[in-house]
Length: 419
Ligand code: AOF
Ligand code: ZN
Image (tube, rainbow, N blue to C red; front, side):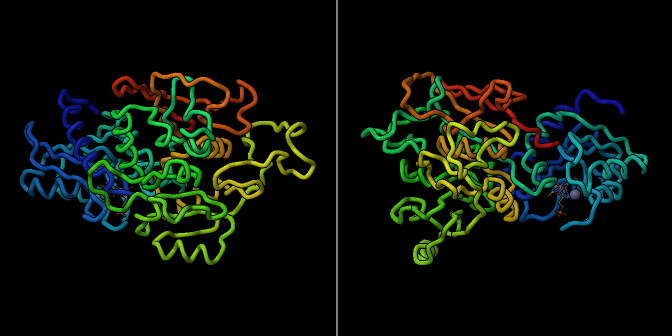
């Protein structure tokens, strides 16, 4: 299994082709393929869901029978070995007479998971695995999570000051609510470059998740404005337990079956009114307030709870009312049923904590602007109880730092999407 000098260069071509498919392939993976004969590219393939045919089959077709025979095939994902919407690509590769296959990673789909490589090797083809593996795994991490767990990859996004504040103190004329990030009303915290990059994250996501408080505070559109095509509209999911979503909000005004409200109590008239505007309304199971404690954290009940399990202080949260918080686990399960493979959580302080506490967060993308808000009253990245000991803090692993003008961002994982 020899790695050749040009393998990485051709794999980068395959990865570039795969990236063209982002937004057009979900719930399937983004895959690019390159056929190389005598040192030059003779066929390229980029998968799109609507196109049905897998990347390697497209690339082999473009190369043509003659050039494909004896060629090397580069692709960012193992060829499949199963019958799905298409036949097994491993067999198509064999039939085409490909001599060598270079793949960036194994297919995490349990239906494939190494069997494609095995088929090729059994037929005497040279198979090289793992070229540009880290990049390839990152590109299809949502697919990997979804195909094995049937729930989406959840990325928690926030834009904040260096001291971890997402908005100035709520209630002031500048910041109407602590419940959303209050970003628009109070002025943007992060730079234009950082906000432009956020559109890339939205483009790569199937759904965006906020609490209704964010809508009330900021009236955001929550759309993908990357300017690139996508197969399915970005699903705008709003946690709104008592259907407080204002009819005059921009999400309602622009709804086209791409706004989903998850509530606990659906008052029939209001539900019908929202539905008449093209908003979908569904009820999800609730979790009682005393369960909003991280599962791995010992509860500290005495001071803060009544004997009934209800919080003493009413919780001002956005769509997450006392005794009526949407069960975040049920929320992601429901989204998984809708073939949503990735969720960008852009909620405010309360949704951020609810997501962390429920253990649904796979990764974070946290933007920091070189500003300091300070003050006890300003809104922290995640409110609520928080983790009570440093030893219990959520650990962010495999951290990557990004720069956007004066701002920077921390990307990292709470859980390995491939585990
Ligand atoms: C893709 N595109 O280029 C490759 C895929 O239902 P099917 O037949 O489209 O099969 C989908 C599975 O095929 C997918 O989950 C993945 O495991 C494998 N490879 N899929 O959509 C491609 N190479
Ligand atoms: Zn295939």
